[in-house]
Length: 318
Image 1 (cartoon, rainbow, N blue to C red):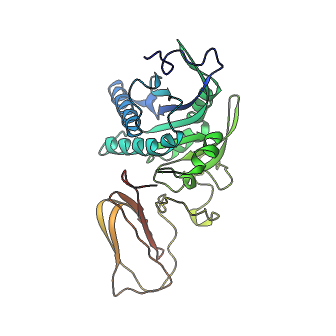
Image 2 (spheres, rainbow, N blue to C red):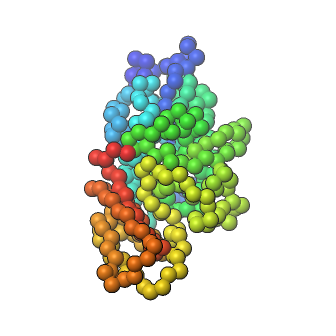
Image 3 (cartoon, rainbow, N blue to C red):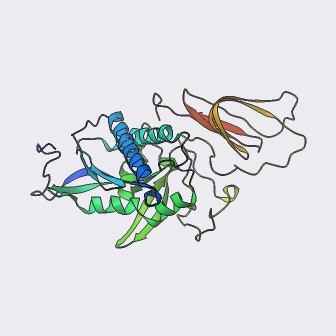
């Protein structure tokens, strides 16, 4: 550990230094056998290392504490927070996706993010910014989202301050329109927080007014019944459940979708497809079709008469 104002005892005499704080936790680690627990722990550290490297944060330039099945980290004050809520999250997601391919017990993480005054002494990190990052990660809404949607590998929860001052400003790989707010009431915490699942237009369970449905009742409203969400700057189309209910139209239509690693759930197609073609003999109606792609894309197509696709990759500005 360096003692030159980065990883040594920092901020103790001046009341703290403003730093970006990350708190990560492995979901369901208490149910794992020791061998699998060690494997997931190693994979978590590798994913964090990949994410740090992607934003130019070198080993030894940040403070990181082991929390058994989690990680607490504080970045140098000169690390741009936009990188952390953008490229860092995107790389962490891609690392998890790569690691989880073909695994029966995928690594799933909850991430809490905050920024504020942090004091670092010989015992570690202290400050309200640290406390809130931990509360965000371990909040009841965050745990419930991950418990009730096991297909999600990464959930990010940011503080209201961080969303308003950093995320909402946008930037490369930053998706402010894909966040949803909900109130966190746990222990002494009563705060607004913002929830985000990478590659989804919105996190599950959280209603348009920030409410969560009663336990066991799933989504607060069907996708087609919700108020329209503002158009996202970097949308990826619908990606929850089976997509919207198809419109009742006469005749039949067939769509041919080309691409690799396609994942089909009901009316919705996920994956890096390269094109969608409707049979020339099929009926033409009021449905619309738009598609766009990139080297690494994700998209959706639904039986409602419309299909859309958009992509994002490491070489693309978001």
